[in-house]
Length: 129
Image 1 (cartoon, rainbow, N blue to C red):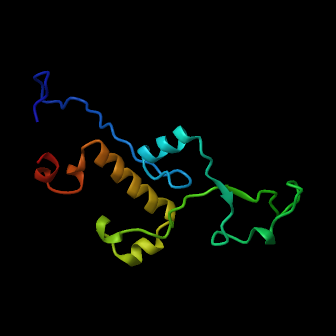
Image 2: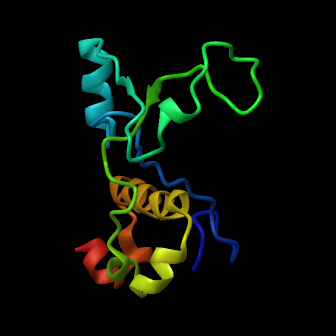
């Protein structure tokens, strides 16, 4: 690949795209902007599907083995949802992955998609066409 400067060294490029997951239903930059624009809070009580807060809650935050927090900003989306076949992996591999890693794969893909650079995941013709 020849560069614009006439040398055989490729010119540096930047891919500008954005993907995100924030608490509540802010699963895209557009939804995040709407959340901010409306001034909404996404704080909720800790879902029982995460852990039993009543089993570890104590009003004294210094007490060892307890928490004084009753809620936080949680994703609405089930962290267990993941399309393993889309990323060309078996469901067994996906099940053994850390949920943060699965989430990161999805968000990085969305950022590349947003930046118009899907050629990394398929034929160049699809991305260019």
